[in-house]
Length: 130
Image (cartoon, rainbow, N blue to C red):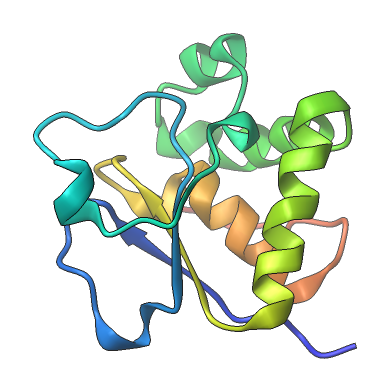
């Protein structure tokens, strides 16, 4: 099995030629971005972290590793699992750009998903992000 090509970008960044399929992952549509400007074939809000997990995490870099662990568990059940399977299928076809409105995309759900899609592994690498 070949590794998927998945990259992370902010929805506010201009589309680039190497984006491939662009998918917004956030549960809510980002402020100030028109659907035409976003150039999205897909909005996969079902894969977004639960409201409880998102509020607990609050994009605190110190909580990222624990967030990634909890989020991977959410991805194993119900709508999250189906949405993740959809992303896997999209990544298997070609380049995939995972979009988020988060100020720091490197500590977002998009970063977790990109890692999982690229490596197809259950473990998140231990890191200190800050």
